[in-house]
Length: 387
Image (tube, rainbow, N blue to C red):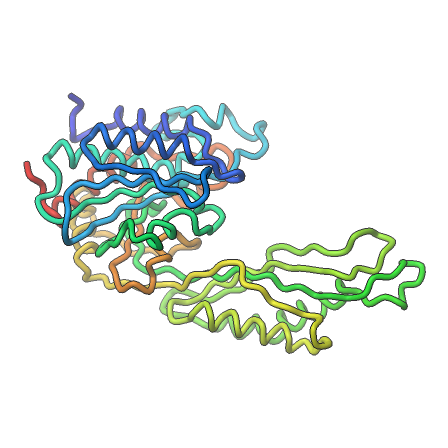
């Protein structure tokens, strides 16, 4: 049996297997990796199932114990694609250990945190399982697209009802207890097509969109930039634009996609109404500008004295010899689906956020080991272990 104080080899093996399974989005096919997770934890003694809203986006759920409290761990296993293979020093789907770091697609975001959770799940089972309540591990897809066929689906179907939710993330084994909300929208403008040789007879949807964008940047964006909640700041970004059908045609259609980051006190509905008002304030004719919601979830802010935070804080301090730190997060994780449920939400895991979504993605092995052991200690504090 491996030394439980230094499970380096086991963790490298788990992460190597995960990296080797292609779960890239698009297309977001997570059936193989869901089956892998369900089978592995079933062998450890968990009751497991796979759940899918659409067939190719499968999620794995593993449960040990029953009753309250319900401590739920979550991590996503879909990744972005590797991009240009020439930018990688090796095969992105083959883990490589070099200079204390594990390289491979998803090593950081988010198969490294998943490996730590898988090992922790198995170690808890080896120690007899929780003495009280239930311990649930959820491994999901559809996160990279902010979609609703991952953890959101498990919540909507009542498959998980956590009292405490721990989301695997690249936090360098520190704690995140507050996240901004996110709203994605499309803004469309309509015009009238005409031959470019008779351009005055048309009505350019692209020029109309330029005026809408100018109004948003001039009158709306500065207000958003002043909106803060502690260290979190509201933001707006226009991420995509497309329109027109051909160079020699006056465009009758234009569309942009907008990302709005919300401070925890803002609601998705309020932010959507506010953006729509800002777009219409450009003064274009009625019916030529419309705003459509793509997806959105509100932010949250937890307490530094919650039981889950305390348990993880103590485990971090015991393992590292240093007090736990509270970090701000750039992106959003799947805990946002539970933001209005009144539960304790915590982001925790190994790895640096800057390592995700880039060639030669990597994970420090020592952080991976620490994360696995910290999680076992925190579970023991929260639920107790039978042996």
